[in-house]
Amino acid sequence: MQPQNSGPIAPISPNPSYDFIYKDPPKPKRGPFKLPNMPKPMLLLVGGVIVLVLVIIIAVIVGRGSNDSQKYIELMSRSQEIVRVSDIVKPLTKNTDTLSLIATTEAALSSEQSSLSNYLATNGTKVGVKDLTLYLDKTSDDKIQAATQNNNLDSTYAKYLKDQLNSYLSQLQSTHKVAGKNAKVILDNAISSTETILNSPLLSAAQ
Image 1 (cartoon, rainbow, N blue to C red):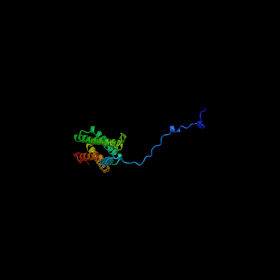
Image 2 (spheres, rainbow, N blue to C red):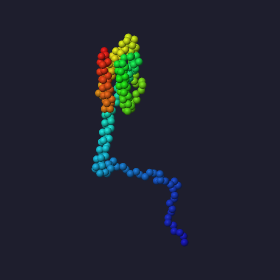
Image 3 (cartoon, rainbow, N blue to C red):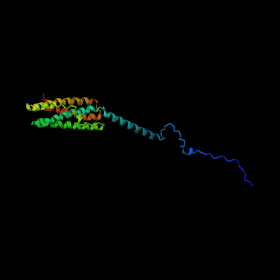
Image 4 (cartoon, one colour):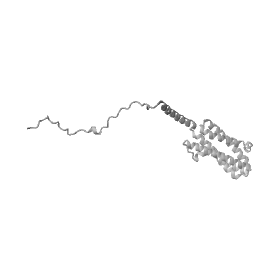
């Protein structure tokens, strides 16, 4: 008995396709973004947190105020020059009032420089040694030496210090007008201490 023939057998393709193995499955289409299905009190809480974060960010930006770091560097440079000249006078005078004035002035200005330097560093500005030479004036050295020879060093220094502190105070006050909240605290203290030094008997009498 011969086997039944069910029909011709289809020929096998010499180059079968296996693309279906390598192709990524079709990705589902994404619909529009929707808030998660949360209870209303939870949604209000999340919204409140977002608003609070935005308020904090705005407060930080406003607190920084003007980002013009050059104004603060100029203040530091002016005070640095006063300290430099005061250091020249210190070993040359024997007047206790002058020495006390120098100690008070240097302590106040050094503290203000440190506060301003830290403030600038917090805002990403590093102050170098060269930045503090903007008001360097070597003619002041010659005047101090001449005053020493003419025996009027104390009065010459008092006049110098009064003029320089008045200029420093004026610059503090103008910078204060455009400063942010954090910087204003530093400038308020600097203005107060500078006014106190200017009201000292030695500087009040200086002409």
